[in-house]
Amino acid sequence: MSNDAAREKYKAYLVTKGLRVTNQRLAIFEAAFAQKEHFTAEELLDHARAIDDSVSRATVYRSIPIMTESALLREVDIGKNLKYYRPNTDNNNQVAQVICMDCDKIFEISAPFMSWYGNSVSSKLNLTPVSQRLQVSAHCNTLRETGTCKNRAQG
Amino acid sequence: MSNDAAREKYKAYLVTKGLRVTNQRLAIFEAAFAQKEHFTAEELLDHARAIDDSVSRATVYRSIPIMTESALLREVDIGKNLKYYRPNTDNNNQVAQVICMDCDKIFEISAPFMSWYGNSVSSKLNLTPVSQRLQVSAHCNTLRETGTCKNRAQG
DNA sequence: CTGCCTGCAAACTCTTTGCACGAAT
DNA sequence: ATTCGTGCAAAGAGTTTGCAGGCAG
Image (cartoon, rainbow over all chains, first blue to last red; front, side, top):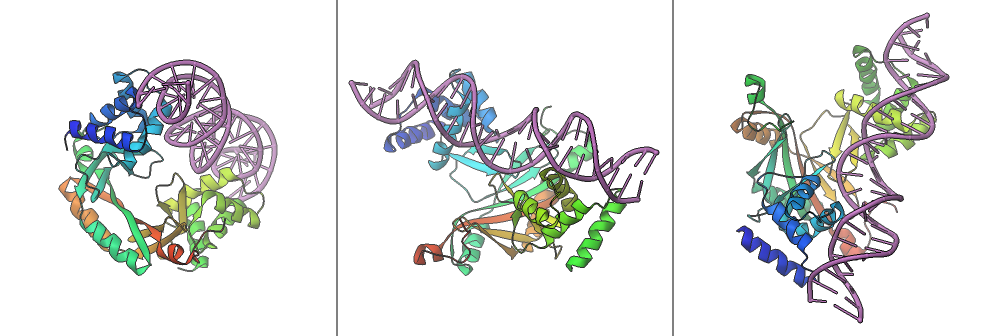
């Protein structure tokens, strides 16, 4: 899905829900879909303000659930008391995350067996699966061996 | 591993690390190992205070990393901005969690393929896997069908 | 005795919310 | 004109930390 298509989908979602299409909501949308990597709420605020400097932190936090519910944004919780997000361009939530603890990089790997597992295990407990996540936390061999890694977060 | 064995292991771990064996640390240990379900830091504080009412919240929070590092406690982050813990009696971390979102119950299911997956996927990225987690979030059929569920959290 | 450990309360981080103003429909 | 959306700042939840006194070794 292109960013243009996603923007139209977002506008349509807002209208359908009786929500207003405001400049701030569009700026936050643009900021989110300009990202190539996972981002936090605070980073989203920074980028949205670069587009429209009237955007406030509150509006970012109020927009995130809307974009998540519309399936345009995917939440990625890696257990750091800090949530990450990314545009859900391919509408694929059968994805595992491999988290490099040294470089703070999140790799995403297709893992279609997750939903099979979720269904299988839920049915035995008389539950209806909603979502599943599979995450691997790891250390960086490149960093250890060479002292640097291109994925390393700038500090 | 029995609770007695775990207690001795904890004491030995403290001594090895040059840490002191205090009444508060032991009370927190006892409180943790008396639990049958997953618990939060706050619940651990309550139970520890029932054993030794001098235990403070700060000491609970300072003890949790010690018990986690000694592998006596296992952290279970289910993405709720609230961490859960449980005694790691069987020393088994190849476990998936099935989380009932309606009843707040966490089921644990053995999932030995997790470490295979972690190794396999990490090696392709030149990473060394440290841990992995697999979690399924689900709704409760029993609650929906009958209006009650024995796993339901008391409110 | 020495220095780690403790409780207390304040600080911290991330997120949510009440309020009065402002803008979309 | 309405009514929802917004920014601001304060509140909230969970956790961490500085400090002065206390207890294990």
